[in-house]
Image (cartoon, rainbow, N blue to C red; front, side, top):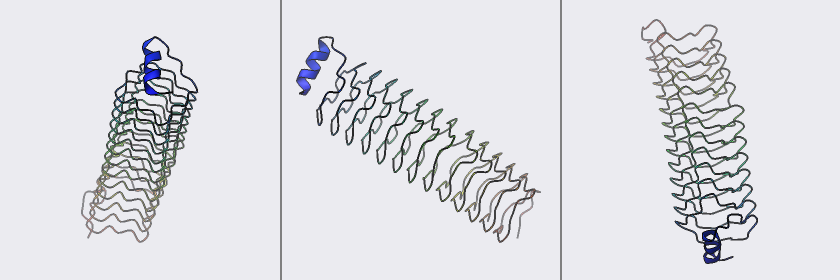
Length: 279
């Protein structure tokens, strides 16, 4: 089907285009409000700046498609294949992205507020500067993902996999991340204030310059982690493993270190819990 035919039929009132083969179709800036394209083949298509609000794109093949600047507010993309898709500046507010594959996709500064991404594959995805406030990320795979400067406040993270993910400068304040796997993650200068990271795995994670004020890290694995210059004021570090961790020049004022393991940890220049500086 050609673009002209689809647009003509849509203008005539037709909305259900389930299962159509429109690979590499060009529909930039098209008004496709509440269109149904579930199970369709749209790989390589151009939907730049298109109006796809409320659209049904469940199980649609959008591999390598371009949706930069498009609006998908409230759309359903359940189990869609969005591998290597371009979705820069896209609006996905309250969209359904459960079980989607976004591996290697580019969602630079995308709006994903309150979006449901449960069970999605986000490995190697770029979400730099994206807004993920109150997003549901339960069971998501984020291996090697780029989340630099992303806003993740209030997001849900149950059972998420974050190995080697980059959160440099990201805002994860007030998030609930117990038992999360963040080993080798880059969290330089990230904000994790008042977050729950109880028993999280932060083995060799880079938290240099991070803000962890009032953060719960009780029982966390911080073996070999870089916490140099981090703000751990009032942090809960009870029973945490800080073996070989770099805490140089960190602020530990009021932190609870009861039962914490500090074998071979570097505390040079750190402000210890009683407010004095360690030499």
